Figure 1 (tube, rainbow, N blue to C red):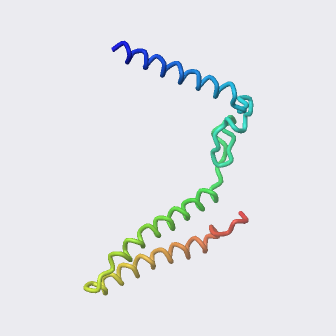
Figure 2 (cartoon, helix red, strand yellow):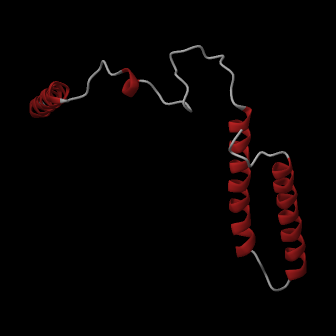
Figure 3 (cartoon, helix red, strand yellow):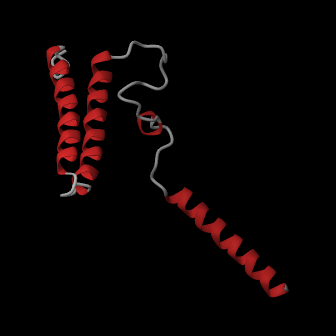
Length: 117
């Protein structure tokens, strides 16, 4: 029991020494405001939080998420393609792609794919 207690104390001492050495030898500056602040989409976290948000930036992220989820849904559809129900599978894929193409046309018509706004 005494040996176990001695080992525990030695482990605590060694770990504390290593932590103190890493703090002393580290070259990180605690006064660097840019490195210490979190990055939030280009906003300064120390300023007013109610500044206007770019609607165009938000809609571009929504478009990205829609097409990202579309890829995640098409891959399992390809794997589940079966010879027995090929006609049903083609109807589902056609309907799915048609909805995506109509959405893309609507976004293009609203000039949401234009980066110059």
